[in-house]
Length: 186
Image 1 (cartoon, rainbow, N blue to C red):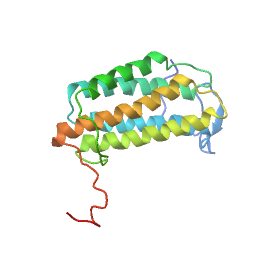
Image 2 (cartoon, rainbow, N blue to C red):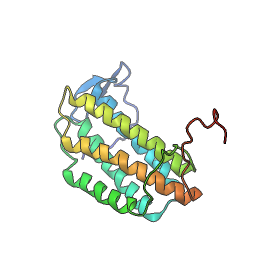
Image 3 (cartoon, rainbow, N blue to C red):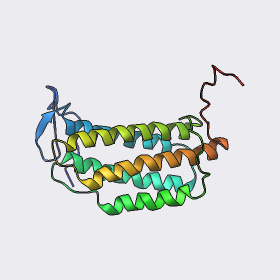
Image 4 (cartoon, rainbow, N blue to C red):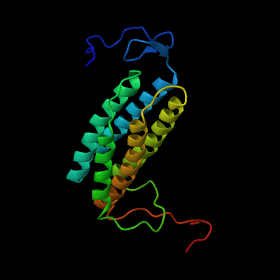
C-alpha cells in the first residue's frame, strides 16, 4: 500500500501536472488521469446512492463495488499494476443474475427518474459508461487489462438493474418513457 497523506496540499500540481502511483508526473488532462478521475467520480456517485435507504442486498453489493473501484483506480493510477481479476466481473454477473431474476422483462424504455436512490443510480450508470469510454481511449495508447474493461462494462449493467430495484423500492414502479407525450396527449 502507498503512503498515507499526512499533509493534504503539496503544491506539486500547481503547474498542471499530477503524480501517478508509480511517481511518474503527467499532465492533469492525461488520458490515464481522466480515466482514474472518472472512476473516482463514479465511486462518489455510488456513495450518494449508499447514503439512501436501500434494500440490504443492494447496499451490500454497492459496498463491495466501492471497494472494487478503489482497486480499479489503483490499477489505472499505477502503470503496469494489476488489481482487477476475472473473478471481480464474475461476481458482478452472478449478482446481476440474482437481482434481475425477480424483475419483470423490459417492454418499454424507462426514464432515468424516480426517487433519490433511483436517480442517483442512473447518474452513476452514465458516469460508469463515461469511465468505460475513458478506459477504452487509454487502451488505444497504453495497457488497460481486458478484465478492467469487462468489469466496468458489467458494472453499468448492474447499476441499471439496481436502479430498477430502487424504483420499485422507493416508488413501487419505474417511470416509463412515453414517446411524443406532449405532442400527442392522451
